[in-house]
Amino acid sequence: MDAFLVETVDLLRRTPEVLRALLLELPEAWTATADTEDGWRPKDVVGHLITGEQTDWIARTRRILEEGTARPFDKFNRFEMLERDVDTSLDELVERFAELRAENLRRLGDLIRHDADLDRRGLHPALGEVTLRELLATWSVHDLDHVSQIFAAMAGARDAEVGPWKQYLGILLRREDPAAVPG
Image 1 (tube, rainbow, N blue to C red):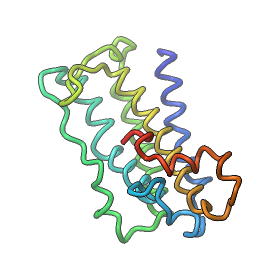
Image 2: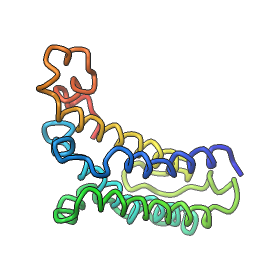
Image 3: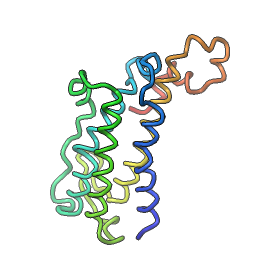
Image 4: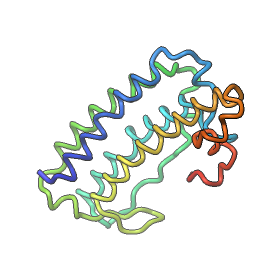
């Protein structure tokens, strides 16, 4: 099996455990702040990750393998969680994400039969042709991006309390310049 795939799946497998260790049973004082002024709280981020597990990564993998570039990927609703998860606790969302990720990694193992599958192409509606390898790399980096967003939101919960040390804390300085944070 291709080393890239093994390493990517290994990282994807770790994300639910990182979220469990970081967020389960954490007081709301640590999770009620968004990462930037108009950003997301940890609950929003986990909800967004759930939406990706439900409608994005495996659906796009399947589309690449079954249809290639014949039909573009369906649009991804990045904000679906804002209404869907209003009455769901963060702990419940973390566990739901873990269940969905485990199932999706099993599906991924069933879908990718050969190393050559990683070079097969699909059609992104905005980006044009993309490979399965690029999609999987994006999935793993997407996890890292959003885990860092959770850390930034949690750090923001103590923004005022750090006092003059803030000038040394890049994670808090990002809150002052949201334009520097990709959307």
